Amino acid sequence: MHYQEELDKIFADRELWKHRTLRTVLDPFCTEYKYTSLSQKIEILKKCFDNDLDLQELVDSYKDFYYNENKNEVPKSVELGLINLISEIFKNKNI
Image 1 (tube, rainbow, N blue to C red):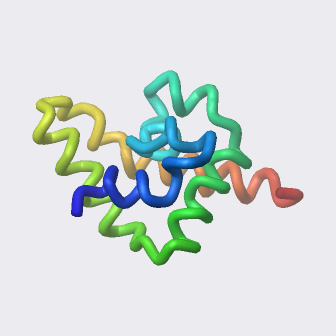
Image 2: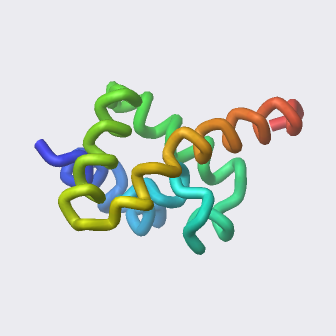
């Protein structure tokens, strides 16, 4: 199953459904990422983990999707997005 279909099952009836591409969490160069707070990013990932989605599979599917869309710059930023996210979590230990 495509990763967005899996995310649809989790988020379809909620306000977070607009984040179905995961660019809000994984792409530090997109507008969605910049306007999604750290706590929202954490909430999105937590819902994924709570629904037994594997992060490595999500990341791989995310990259495949954007390579297939010929948006080759998008998947190249995943690691930076995750590094930024983890860094922000440790900077904001009160979350």
